[in-house]
Image (tube, rainbow, N blue to C red; front, top):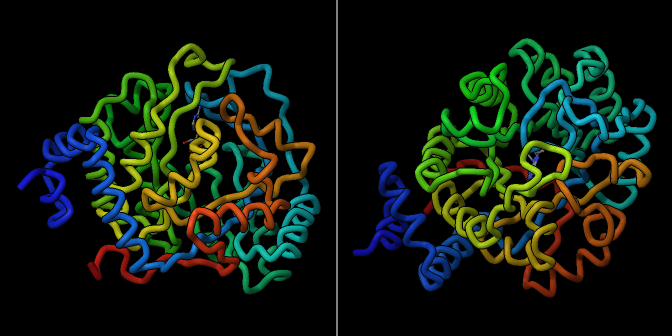
Length: 351
Ligand code: 5AD
């Protein structure tokens, strides 16, 4: 039996087999077979629903200096901003009026947002919109900090691990950052009862199938409720400005593979995918993705949250364009759902 069928039957492979799987999936028929199985599993767990999350990018200050990222500390061209508590709440209000039931508060690693300030913000959002889920995406913090924010009411946390290969991690990040601490953060988040989201970029400079195989092993071990998987897109004022973007096709194959590995996982069709390919999100759904994260940030700030070049933030990427989005999702054969869209109970079973 070939590696594709073997993986579909028994997704727990060894590292070198995942490497071979990635190589084998270059064949269009193999990729189609993976996508077919991914869609079957995704329907089994989530039906035809595509869940939406309102993304509020509330600060682009960042103390980190990741080599790929446009809001890295070392980019003097970034126009920095912070939203006040009132501004964040007003984004939630707009989102709530539109029907959003999940707010993702995302930002750079900005020490201005201390635990006290974050607790206030989370409590205020939960008090006004008790049925809504609050997702945080604010980087690495201490166990104690995660505990306090969870206590304040945060339900979910997104922290992409970016790459699970130590050697590759060191090529993407300055020496003061460590993969082991990042992974520890993810385990801490899970332990504290967050629905946790890990994830990685596809096609960062020099990345190999072997390294992507490590991402698959790590996801299998962590069993996160969510995973953000998007192509690398260069940003003109970072050290990676001249590097090529990641491949849309490889990203899609990885979405299918991760869906098969963890069938109950929530997988967004990422903004980066939509940025590189106008049909990227539709292709993402057809590969196994089931989440969209439209932008709810204040209109005037959207361009400033500039992670990579040409990042979408208007048109269908805007949370306000729900009607358009609904049409596109229906046209692709899915159903836009405004429900909270929590992760399935047992992400790894029920095959
Ligand atoms: N290309 C693609 N994704 C990027 N991110 C940051 N910079 C880039 C880039 N140049 C992603 C990281 C981060 C998420 C918020 O955005 O994976 O976790």
